[in-house]
Image 1 (cartoon, one colour):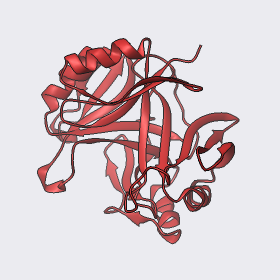
Image 2 (cartoon, rainbow, N blue to C red):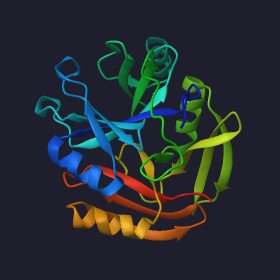
Image 3 (cartoon, rainbow, N blue to C red):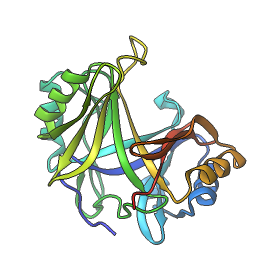
Image 4 (cartoon, rainbow, N blue to C red):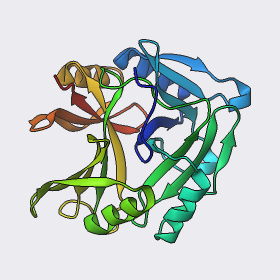
Length: 255
């Protein structure tokens, strides 16, 4: 169980869904998640747990937001307002400013200059996900962008990221972000396959003891396959979506 996250690193994920009951049933069946509602004072926000460790949040998708169902990743910040200022100074955008979540922390949604939506979380009592490196928990986070060099420069300036080149060819360009020497984020050059007007995309990988069996379970419970499971130098990976179309990835667990 993890109890802290480095500044600038992913610390939380949550789902905005048009069918909260179905989402609970789906993720509970596929990953063994259990749930606890925060009650009306938190708008019915639901906390998800794996083996008793906090792993994610779920909330109802308000039609007024005019957004499709989807997952959001949050980066840890010590000062949400200061980070918003740094991001907007670097060409990013604030989506309504920061707001207090009583007794939990302070949050904001922002976008980088290439349109990649990312959350900010300034914790007080809610320190973020507690499960790491186990089935049903987030084991990797990735940003895919058409504007690779400029996007890396932006996040380095806004969050102090330390990056390391993993591959640098027109076929595959990829850097990782290190926190205290540990790789926690990957940044992929999507220029070869993303549409010209496509925004950058943040996604995450949930760990699976058996990726292929988890894909089957996802399909059997109303989800879908976006990219079939395949072996890669980074493990066996797949891209999937839940019953209302919210996408995420799967990864085999590292030994």
